[in-house]
Image (cartoon, rainbow, N blue to C red; front, side):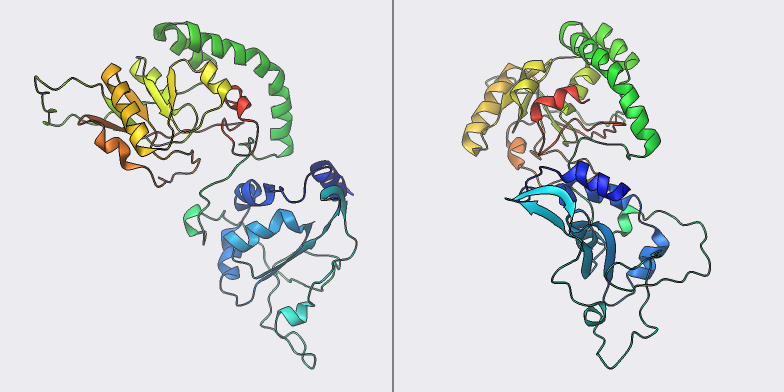
Length: 351
């Protein structure tokens, strides 16, 4: 009954064709529950079949893409006019018998080479039994041992939705409505000497690590060559990357971005300029901005929450002789401030 209620709440009224949670959001949470010992046994198998009571659209992408499962057997969802109605089909259709999936002929029975990792105490459509003599403490699967790395994932929720964490989330919401305007006013109107302590007191944490100085000194500009500002090049983890750098240096910068919501532009404490993705036009624009002062750019063009550096545009390397590389690492405890499929106007309010 609990599973049926969950399916009704989660899927009622969702458009079937545009459903992407099973591919973009859930793999991050599923990977946090994979045991290393079970995965080591699983990857030694030949044909791997997964049977679950969960709706197939929730688990199929994760099991196939990240655990390399060959066949996924889950519950089908009812839909009307292209929309899920929140009910599961009683019988699965067009699913091969387990014996045929495993390549066992009609005259044979499943032999001892078939291993089931499960805790089923009732039949679904297939009889897949597992007998465990011992069950010790198990370890979580490290990300570097996953067959396919999790590079992109979407969704606002950063914490694992356990009962205790969910309770803390709803208890925090009333305080967040008070905290958001305080943070916005402090960042937009107050000088750095006052806003930084207030933001720190409200929950922001920023650690700065500077490299040791070397004996290298940048070349002095020629007399006939106009002086340009510094170009800061950052990896792109969150929407606030240029702001973190600006507050760390305690000076106003100009940020060039590829995509930013109108709400984020209005609420930004520093100047933002949109790039057109046209190399010639963007180059001229960055040249002009550098002649006016320091500039910060995230050449990856899209945010990545995981510790990976994406393919980036090398245009920044042609703009200035004085380039300062900046490595950023951001962690959030409750909500992600960026999303690909949600309302981007809520991005600055989610941090």
